[in-house]
Image (cartoon, rainbow, N blue to C red; front, side):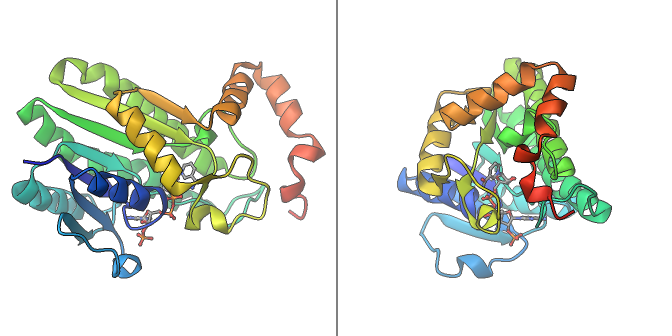
Length: 250
Ligand SMILES: NC(=O)c1ccc[n+]([C@@H]2O[C@H](COP(=O)([O-])OP(=O)(O)OC[C@H]3O[C@@H](n4cnc5c(N)ncnc54)[C@H](OP(=O)(O)O)[C@@H]3O)[C@@H](O)[C@H]2O)c1
């Protein structure tokens, strides 16, 4: 049987580029999202598409079990995610709750059924797409930044807890990748990377069973460096006008 990979949010951006990259390797791939309209032209003999919302625990369990019963399951990739349409100092709290539901609960809803399967078969890989936004509380995107920090910590704990069960866990923390999510941004996006290139790097990190893979190299190191600063100093730097001009009109 070929490698079997399931990708939430596999109908767009990073998830879609990963689906294509795994198909190119000869894997069987399942993708899900709330709507399949975006992928009506994306077809392959080894590709299976499902309409499922990651915030719906039952729907995710049914979808993943259905995929598993027909194709097996080696890797679960939780890529589905949302962000704020616009940076804001005072957030829309309903939107913040929605971001948490999709970005954090959505990962749990994908990992729970996958983990049950993998614990039984004593092998598998769990992968989640966090973000460089996970390393520091970023201005104007509070819940997004916090949701990605939660995903990063979840993965780190799981990587330890599941090590002796034959399951490896990889957290991917990308910088700016050119996808529909970032195409609506109005702020500068240093080191913006093409999604196919990002997918290649991500697959390589998964192959190597990296616990955490943050990229691109330069910006990920800047972000990590900032995370070591005393928080008072970090806050002073980040409240400087030059760091916040995209929040000016708020
Ligand atoms: N692009 C970047 O620069 C960047 C950087 C760091 C981290 N990330 C993270 O990478 C992941 C993928 O982002 P992307 O840039 O590829 O975004 P994208 O192009 O907007 O793709 C997001 C995918 O998630 C799906 N999705 C959203 N809400 C969902 C839900 N409730 N249930 C099921 N599927 C849902 C979307 O499909 P539907 O809307 O049809 O459901 C779509 O397939 C996200 O977790 C994002 O936070 C992205």
